[in-house]
Length: 355
Image (cartoon, rainbow, N blue to C red; front, side):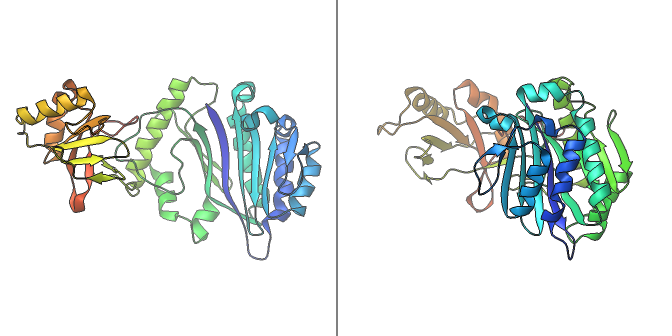
């Protein structure tokens, strides 16, 4: 598991330059005790050199205000403990990542430190920089059960354990979302979730500590996913429908007898059949498809790696699925508008809609 603080973005207010304030960001990181982890600095146009003391890096951030600076602990495993600052004249993005032994060392206090860091930055720099739209602590490489259909919201990462909202940004900046902020402030929170106001910031903390078990953190991510979908009801993610089904794409799909369709890139064969509402019928067709699946080829020698059924409706896809699996047929689809193909059984960690 990796934990990552993301500040995207620090926008310079009118008449200011973001790079001018980055030394104070670096100083704040040092003040909360996290700069000591760093050993090396890779600036945009120089060779890698020591990252200590922090003042040296702060000066270089001002001298090279265009590009990406990487400050890290270990050249052999750069991403285990790394600070990445990408800057232009008008804005800067900051990510700070901990994994492996570095995360183990800091896990009991890291969330508290990050909350203090973001709060102090907003307090000191809010008059010079806009903080938003994305301020968050995420975890990566940790599976969790997600609600279907997934929904897209540009201010919320899919695996946040802390969400920060700058009221000033969301209420005054053109990219702010004051309505969403008001709903988040008013909605009842799930048990165990903390909502805290610190000056301009509203903070939602879904996990008390990174020392919690991965199972507990995973459950918190699932809780957050469901809560945000219910409270904000953001747009459904592209490639999904309201029923929670995923659109399926095959790059080289063409008619190919005796199949209905065949994708030569994935060697997938699709056979359209008609089954009844209980998923019964089409015995002969399913028998043939089962045989081709087992043999791994069509009668003309075309290779088959996987097979799927196409049935007339979502309801019949649900009804026939267990029967198809028992015959070795891996997937079941149904047709949508304009030749689209859909499955009620997407791969991944998805909750069944309505459960």
